[in-house]
Each structure stands twice: as structure tokens, then as C-alpha cells.
Image 1: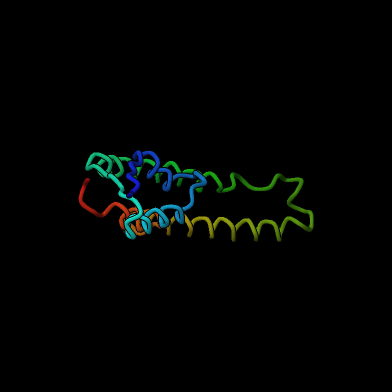
Image 2: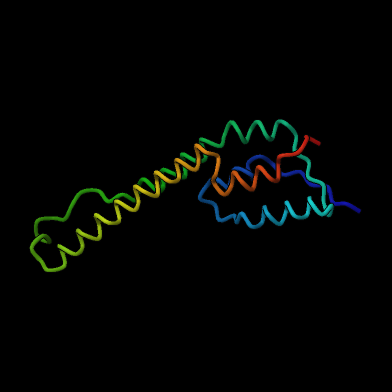
Length: 129
């Protein structure tokens, strides 16, 4: 007997969010579909909803990266202590890394190359049931 499954659009969209869901679970689901252990129903409406809401979920998650940017510098009282100079150097390095991370995420999103994009494409790229 083949298990028949329907998954709501919001579950798929969590893979673009800060949720703790693991893409490996989607890969397991894909393997189960491929080996015939289950049949996944994916109506066109689900595909359309994913497409319409993908960007919104991505931008919500990207905002969590953006708020990690430090605001302002050190107060005057901290600028003359020995730890200030190495701290500011590390802060500058962190800001640069964070900016590079943000740019990479945007590029991957635009190219539809995020991990979620790849796994969902494999899983959902089949005729609607």
C-alpha cells in the first residue's frame, strides 16, 4: 500500500524562513516519492502559492541578517582603552562578512539556487496529481 500525502504550502515556505526545519527532511520525502513508498499530491495551486510567497518569506528572513549589522560606534569612554582597537577591527571584519553573506543570499535567491529552491524543485517538479 502506497501512503498518499498532501503538504500545505506554508510547510514548504518554512524552508525560506528562520524555522528550524531541515532540508534533509525534504530530501527524505523526495526519496520516498522516488522509490514509490508514498505519493505526494501537489496541486497547481500549491505551486502557484509557493511562487507568489517565496520572495516575501525570503525578505523576512533576510531582514534577520540585516538587523545583525551593528548600530553606531563605541562610546567615548571606551575608545581609549586597549581593547577598543582590536574590537573595532573585528567589528569592521564582521560587518564586511555580513555584507558578503547578504549579497550571496540575494544572488542565490535571484538565481533560484538556495538550498530550498533546489530541493523543492526536485520534489515538486512533477505533474500535478
